[in-house]
Image (cartoon, rainbow, N blue to C red; front, side, top):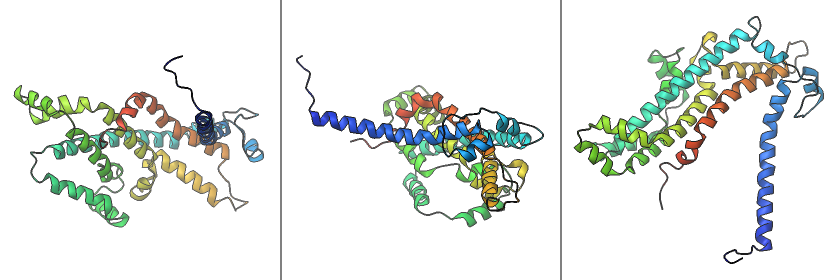
Length: 293
């Protein structure tokens, strides 16, 4: 048929090799997740006797029953999950609020001293105070052992803020001029024009911020001293560390491998469930603020 270009054998072979490599890397990436899920439904002896499997021979819900049993791990796990959901939700909203407001302000050419402020932001990307000074500031401000210590110190990501600023700079100036003629204030322009046009960007960076808060255990390890306030990831970390510490002690009571796998699944599934709702915005959002050729 006219218009159809015959592909060379080399091109076909190259495509086959590329698809094979992609499939190979996809399989070796997915298998660990499948194994963890399968192991969470397997009895303890099967995990110890079978090095790798994707379908358990014996299906059991004992691990999940223990996790949600109020007389066992139930209260601790449910409370820590609630803490993680609360910190993730409030933290993500806080991140988006401060990131977008600062980025929009720095994108306005009428802002005096904006280059100096931007340079200060860029400076923090290269140099930081470090862990101990940050801890002393958090404690000095009275945020130690509070959830604010998990949210406010990282309220703005300098890298994300610069990308959002670039996006706001690319917005058509005609829209803002038309809104200003109609009597819209700067805040009105930001709320009614800039934010609605940046929904893919907000969804993308919101997902990044949410994953960061959900997976963060080190901040809780540093700033929280009350076990009742521990987020889920710190509980998971403590169980894994306890297993490693007691591995060489035959008299120690080790956490069951099945239990660890089930807790990992519970900690992973919630954040995975968020992605499908943001997927349609994600592809467009990752290119926001990119340098145009």
